Amino acid sequence: MIPTIRLHSQQLQNPAFDNPKDLVSWMGAIQAQDYAMSKWAIGIRLKSGNLQMVSKALQKGEILRTHVMRPTWHYIVAEDIRWMLKLSSQRIIAANDSFAKGQGQDISTAIYNKANNLLEKILAGNNHLTKQEIEDIFSKEGFGTDDRQSNRFLTHAEAKGIICSGIDKGNKITYALLEERVPPVRELHKEEALAKLAHNYFRSHSPATLNDFIWWSGLSATNARQAIASIEQELISERFAAQKMYLHQSYKEEKEKNVLHFLPSYDEYLIGYKNRTDVLEKEHQSKAFNSFGLFRPVILYNGKIVGNWNKSFKKKEMTLKIDWFEKDTEVKKELLSKAQQKYITFLMGEK
Image 1 (spheres, rainbow, N blue to C red):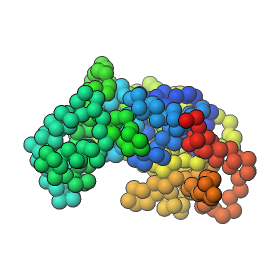
Image 2: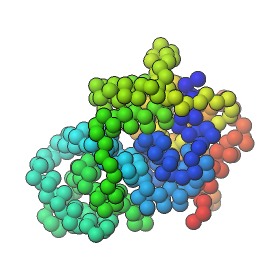
Image 3: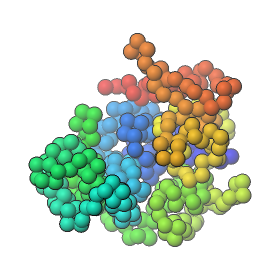
Image 4: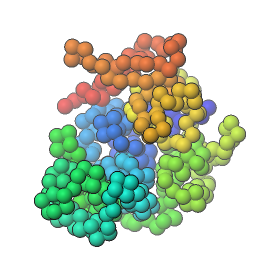
């Protein structure tokens, strides 16, 4: 029952949305650590979408890619960035400082402020710059930054709400000033923001536990409980396999049918939950992700993760190489062909 409901909640069965912005808004946030693969995480959940459509939404600033919630990349819709940063910025800054110290860097507040001022100067006037271009300017200004240090400066500036993703230059991401990229919107009080975050999570990830929500959101247990309590009227509490789970009132348990997808690495279907045993057998977890936080592309079949996949090229023709967890797995060729064609169509759609 859990996988069946999640297929609907996560827009992996009978998707409801035609465009990336509406889909990302529904999901609340989509982890975007692997930039190329994360675009497919959006495309796979649309009625019909291609890479150009997702890239255009990013170019227009309808959706943004930035560090928010946990200290990693996420896609969010532009109008959500400020209230989401208010909830998570201090945690991201603390983690960023911890990473810096772990790499032998002790960056003072004064240095961060100097870097932020320089970013505001060089990005002003919608001057979107790549990481390399920023590093070159920082070096000329006497920062002497290496790649690890520039990561710390950029992540800190994102958490402070100074910069966000800009328009790509070729295949390279850029940074832009948030104030120039996203028009002002009404501010949310903390209570409103917590309620909205819980609403977004449970409608798109149901059924899920309190610990799942804490993991996904990065909130403290106290704030997570507060958030859930604030939307109590929207949630249905059920027990599955002796654990208390919440379902959003919008959930549907649709009739079972054959559903197969080639999910990208770091997909929300796995990474959006602390406990993944409902959709992935324990003995196969090391094939889907490791203890260092590396998530691999996986095959989703009727709600369960059943294998790995990757791209293979022969005579310039792309095919998908499949590695089933159970060697006796049987899937109809038509279903595999349909799932593969969806991915190819996404990549090779209208230019």
